[in-house]
Amino acid sequence: MTVTQPTKNPTNKLTAASIAAVIVSVASLVVRNLIPDWHDEAVFTALMPITVFLAGYMVKDKPNVKS
Image (cartoon, rainbow, N blue to C red):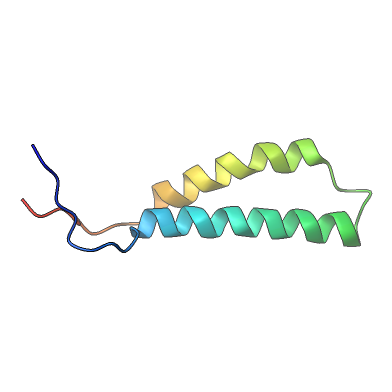
């Protein structure tokens, strides 16, 4: 079976997961620079895959496969 994608655009889930990764990275930089006592690299390293997964899971996506 061959799956044909109608466009080259990324799905909503992929876009949401990418934006979540950017938000966590920026939050880590902000906390590291403004509140260095609160910054723990292990927390932000663990937070990244969790937020990416949750963002991708929560966002609805339209079917993008033509049959």
